[in-house]
Length: 159
Image (cartoon, rainbow, N blue to C red):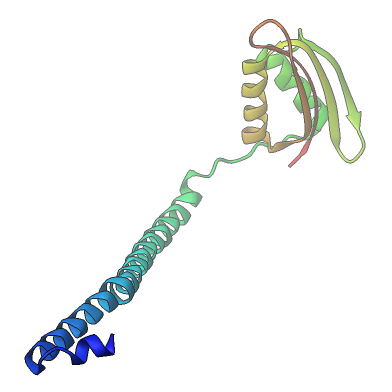
């Protein structure tokens, strides 16, 4: 390669040297500088987007926190868990499918339902949770052949 370069006259050598420098700089820019610069810019944009999202989340979180006291529902005093559960089951229309209701230790009750409506059961659970702070400790639901009908076993406790 050296021999070929030195075989050229001085003007051609300068042109070849200038072209080699231009090609070298172009390769450096295309293969090294440009990808690093683009990656840096992309990460910078991601950081800015995440900062904007964080600012929005903090602002929205403060708004939600300020709204909580005004929208908080007053929970009913449930007294006896067993009587409250029994009363709400009857009010919801689930009493025909309730097969067993028995108290457990640690202020909880166990309930068995057979061939009951899944939708009605879930609505009742939502109501006792939101109005009386009765929590589901465990639940086992078995789907039956008829759509929307299930067998269920639950353990509920005071929240």
